[in-house]
Image (cartoon, rainbow, N blue to C red; front, top):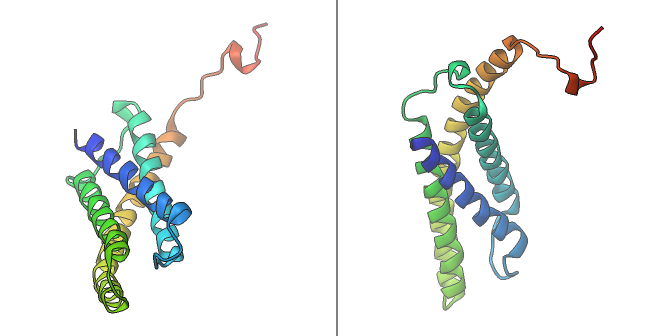
Length: 150
């Protein structure tokens, strides 16, 4: 069940990041490089979850307890901070307010990035184990592969 929760969190924050990158009004101040970098990491989480889920149960490498919930928590935190940041800018009555919003974001967002980086390192270790498992799988040739008997 935690895998489904992590997947939902990843997909949700990915949509938010893509919307900000491609559809945010000009007056919204965002560091597009930071958002793009986060999007790439979140996309790799999604691919990891899909690849892991596709493995047969007997071939799945052990996942550290709590990794999927950590992933979900970090994704939801990123989504909350980013959505609040954008919404606060839209609603800000003055440049002074926008400056405060930017200051708060610059204090909160690095923690999100740090959490995502920490999870990314764990995911990369598991991906390495998954590659070893894939390399050890026997190759089955069939007629569909273009090989014929006799």
